[in-house]
Image (cartoon, rainbow over all chains, first blue to last red):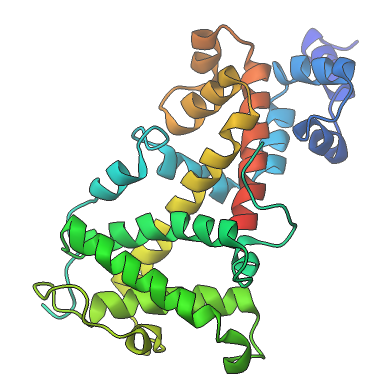
Length: 94
Length: 196
C-alpha cells in the first residue's frame, strides 16, 4: 500500500511538464487553463522549478544577473553607475 | 515593446550599416558607460573618462567604414568586438594617468594590442557584460507587469528567498518562479542579440 508521501510524489510527477511545455510556458503561449495549472504545480514541485529556471537561463546567467543587478543597480542612472566605480586598480607600469 | 531595432541580426552586425543610426546609438549606450567605468577605475577623472569614451567610439565608428577592404575573412561582429576592445585598451595604456586626454590618434587606438594588460582586460569584459545586462533589462522592463518585475528584482537582485518574496508581494511561490523565469528568459534572449 502506497504511503501518503508516495501518493503526493506520484500526483506531482503526473503533472510535471516536458521541456517543450516549459519553453512554451516561458514564452507565455500556453492556454490560460494550462498556464494556471502549471503555475499551481510550481507551488509544490521543486524539480519543475529547477527545470523551469534552467530552461530560462544557465546558472552562469542567473549568477551574473544577481551580481550586476545588486545594490540597486537597476534603479541607478548611467551617470551614477559610471561614477559609482570601485577604487582604482593598480597600473602595471607603476 | 522593447526598443531593439527591427531585424533578427545582432546589434554587432547591425552597426555595420552606416544608415542604421538606431543601432549605433544603442551600441554607444552600452559601450560608453562601460568605457567610462573602466577609465575611472584606472584613475581618470570623470570628465577625462567621458572624453576618452568619446575618442574610442569615434575611432571605432571610423574603423567600421573600412572593414570590408581591411579584413574580409573575419566575421564582422567578431572583428568589431576585437577592434573596440583594442581601442579601449590602447586608450588606457598609452596615456600616462596624469596626461591630458586627447593625445591618441585614431590609428593608434585601432592598433592590434599585442601585450594585453590582464587586469584591465578582465575589468573590460566584466564592465561590458554589466552594461549588456543593464541595457537589456532597461529594454524589456516595459514588456512586463510591474508586479512581475518587482518579483524578479526582489528575488534575483535582493537577498530575500523566493518564499519571502511571495509573502511580501502576496503571491504564490509558483507565481514568483513564473515571473522571474519569464523575465530571465527574455533577458537572456535580449543579451544574446545585443552581445553576440
